[in-house]
Every structure is written in C-alpha cells, then in structure tokens.
Amino acid sequence: MEKNQKDNKVDLEQVKENAILLYSHHPSLQIDKDVVRAAVYNDGYTLKFAHRSLRSDKEVVLAVIGNESCTLEFAHTSLRKDKKIVFVAVKKDESAFQYKKYVAKNFT
Image (cartoon, rainbow, N blue to C red):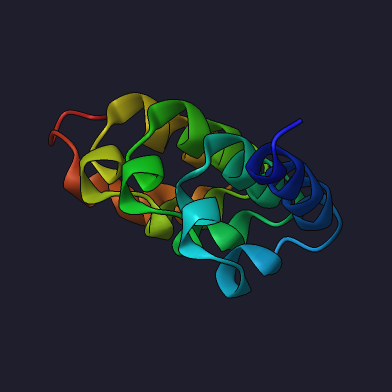
C-alpha cells in the first residue's frame, strides 16, 4: 500500500471517530468524497468544511440532510433550490421549510 493510501485510510478512520478533524486536517481530505461522507455521517455540521464540489454533490447532501436537515444551509445554493433536496429536509424537520423560498413558488 502506498504511503498516501495508508495515510488516507488512517485519516478516514480518524474522521469516522471525530468528524471535526475534517476541518483541522489537510485540505486534500476536504475534497475526498469518502472522508467527507464519513465525517458528515458522524456530524452533519462538518459539511460546512467540505470542499465546495462536495457541498454541490447531491448524493452527499441528501445523505446529510436525511440525518440533520438543518445542515442544508451548508449545501451549495443550487442544491438549496432543488425541490427534492428541500422536500427531504422538510420531511425530516419542518424548520428546513425556510429553504422553500429558494424554489419555485408552486412548491407545495
């Protein structure tokens, strides 16, 4: 196993245990989809530390808001306008309904 692969595996395991490490570790981890998914599964609020490309990733954001809908605020604005994303968030927690204003007026 290459050193980088070994380091990433160690970092992935560390992030699974302590999601806030996504913020404090090397920025290359913030763009690693596996590491980010592990972090947001542990603590959805760490989505705000993920690289913008992953905050724009529908799969990652859906996984997060399925657990913690209020983390929708950290998703890319394009996803905060997505009907499916907002519906999932609102279904989980009505306080996420504030994002309805970003989608079509006939969202109901």
